[in-house]
Each structure stands twice: as C-alpha cells, then as structure tokens.
Amino acid sequence: MTQRPESSAAFNRSLSHWWDISGPYIASEPLRDERQFDVCIVGGGIIGVSSAYHLKKLDPGASVALLEADAIGFGASGRNAGQIITKFGGTTAESLVKGFGHERAAFAWEYIHRGMRTIESFAEQGGQPFDYAPKGTLHASYRSDGDAEIERMLKYVEQMGQSSYFTFVDRKTMEGEFRSNLVGSAAYDSRGGQFNPLKLVRTIKAAAESLGAEIFENSPVAFIDRSGSDIEVHTGMGAIRCKKLVLATNAFTHLLEGVQKVGLAREQSPLLVKATVSERLSPEQWEAVGWPRRCGVNILSPLFFSFAPTIDGRLVQVSGYNTHAPWDRSMAPEIFWGLKRQSSSHTASFFPGLKGLRVSHTWGGPISITPDYVPHVGATSDPRILYACGCWGNGMPAGIQHGVTLAELALEKKTDNTQSWFVQRRKRRWPNRSLAGILSLGVIFRRRRASRRIGKTLNPPISFE
Image 1: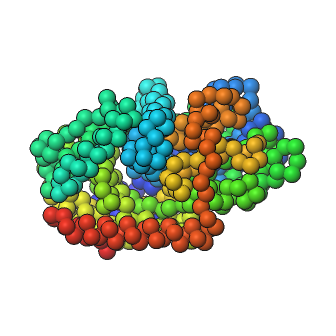
Image 2: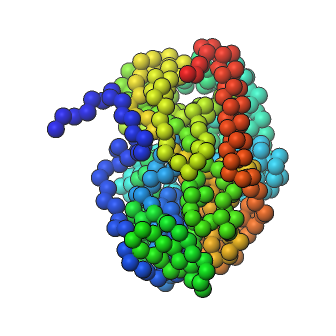
Image 3: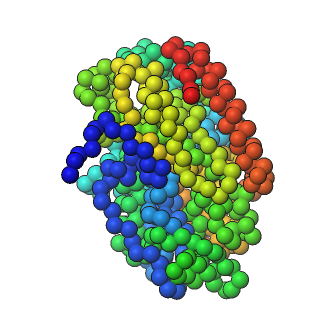
C-alpha cells in the first residue's frame, strides 16, 4: 500500500482531521425492532454520551438508550478545534457580567470549570485516552491594539472572582515567547488545554456502555410521537418507547420531526464553521516560531483567529471569517477550496517562521447559536422532553456538564445544576426560520466587513478571498 505523502491536502466534507488520526472504529449496531427504556437520548455528541454516562452513574437501575443518526462524534463534537477553554456558549466575560450580573456570570464559569474537571477525571484513568495536554490557554490581543482588550477582559474576570486562574502576560514577554509581528499582550488561563475531541466522545461512550447504557448508531430519528403515555421515538428500522426523552442534538435540533410542537424549532440557529490543520512542523519550524507553552492562542478581536498545537506537532487554525449560515435543512459542512491557501497565508502573517507551512486537512462543522449566545438547557413545553443546545465549537466542557444537568433533570433531582439561572430562566427564541437565516447572514456580512477593515490595518496585513 502506498503511504500518503505528509504534505498532501485532504478535502473531506464529511469528516474532520480527528477522524483521520483516531484509529479504527467499529460503530454500534443500529436500533432494530421495538424496545422499551426509561430514558432515550437522541444525539451521540458530547452532550448525549455524557447524559447516558451520568444517568447510569446516578441511577444504575435506570434503562438508558442513545440513538445517533450517524456515528458517535459525527457532529460538532468530532469536528471542533481541540481546545478546552473557559467559555460559556458564545458569551465573553464582559457580555456575561453586563447581561446577567457578576454572580450569575461567576456561576456560569464555575459550571464550565466543573465540566473541565470531569474531562480531566477521564484523562486521569490512564493511557492518554484522548491525548489531553493541560497546557492552558492564551487570550491574546493584536499588537496594534495595545493592552486595552486584555485589561478589559481581566476586569470582568475579576468581577466574577476568577482572577486566581489568570496571569497577565505583557507584550515584551509575548514577544520573547512568540516570534510574531501581530501578537501583543495576553491573558493566560491556566485551566484547560488541547485534546482529541473525537477520542473523548468515544471514551465516554465506552464508559456509558460499561455501566449498562445501550447505544445505537446509524439510527436516525424519523419521528417523535408524544400522543401516548409513553413517548415513541421512531427510526427507520425500529422504535423506542420511553418515559423521558433527552434531545442532545444541539445544532441539528430544528431538523427533528415532532419538535415544533414542543417549542424547539426556534431555540437555536446553526452556523457552519471551517477549520484547517497543518502538516507536522519540523523541530526547526518550532524553533523559528517559539511557542514554549505549546498552548492554544485565541485572538481577542472582531478579527478572530485561533491556533492550537496538536499532540503530533501540527497547528489547528480556525477564524471567525469562514462561517456559513444554512438557509435550508441541509447541514453539509461545505469546504471552501480557497481555505487551504488562505489558511497558509494567515499562518505566515502571524508567524513568519512558518512561511510555506502547508495545510494537510480542511473540514467544517456546525455550532449552535441562541439569540443571546447563552446555552439553552431544560424542559420543553412537554415536561417529559429535555434538551440542550447553544454549544459552540469550544463547548466540550459545557457539553459534558450539560450531560450531568440533563441526567439530573431526567431523574427529577433538585441540584445546583437543575436549579441554575440559565436552566430555570425563560429562554429567548429566534423568530421564524427564514428571518433567523436573514439575521444570521446580516451578522456574518457585518463581521466579515469589520474583519477585512481590521486586517488592512495590521502589519503585515491580513486579507481574505
């Protein structure tokens, strides 16, 4: 068999880089015939497998099934940038404090922190099951912006009582760490790091199955029938009757037949985000760029960029520019062919020592956006049906913690999670689907225009195709 060249460019509109490196995988059998369970979960991403695991952990006697339309981790959970970051949906420290007050903002970040600790507990089981590297995260500014962005972030971090996790890194120190003409001062968050998200989801799937949860892959839900005393969830080859239903479908929620009547059609709107990963950097290239912490770097600006080293010495890159709001029911993560060249150019603009570094893989995936960027978790108008949506690509800590909350809700437990402000509050909803699409396109257009304007002012400038 001919080995694929290291510098080849793989374009796969279905699967991410993580699928390329996570080893062979045998999917569970699809659902066949009719089955009865106490709880049925729809969606095999981080929220779904976490819900299954924590349901069995909290109540070993409960019968739990999970239905996944494709393979575990097929959606955003297996397509993100591989960073564990302190972030609550699409909010910032500033928007959380201004919108909800410092106490609620502090609870939200502590909620994320609990999710991080749960992820770390799986990592501590040994064997590096998902390549977790607890390197922390740098939130950096553009050099031309000075310290203002970082100081503002740290001001709101302090109001939330989170300062003990953060360190201000001045421009001179950053210049010593990164040989970059664009990166300025930063705030270093000691929590989190990098990981393989697909391996994490598979790890939790295995843990849920070891406790007795039954997981059915290649089992897309065709219809949800609420007319009887039990809920019926129908797939192409079978059906599940259950007392409680958990919809862990995030960006795909609006596609489920039967959710419109319980008020979920306008809970969230999907956004498709694109990412790239480079070929492996040589020791000389790492020396040329510096990067001693080897942590993820996220730029605080409307012209957003994220860079994260992988365990095998590559760079994953995501920008806020390359996004797409689907108008119809299609959720295909289309790949913009120019992203390969554009990503290499942007990497070289940030890190001149990486000029010529090639992209080896591009992919896309859906995130879920609520009107106020805060995750939606709770019960529908039918109290038997629970749901979570509003997770972004950096939402793995939130997703795993949502699984805890949904498990507690399904078991009708009163806890800090189930009684939290964002679970109990009245959720804001998008207008009808067509208008939501128009609003999303307007936001994307304005952000792209702002990104192009900012890019022209940088030295070296950053341009987009």
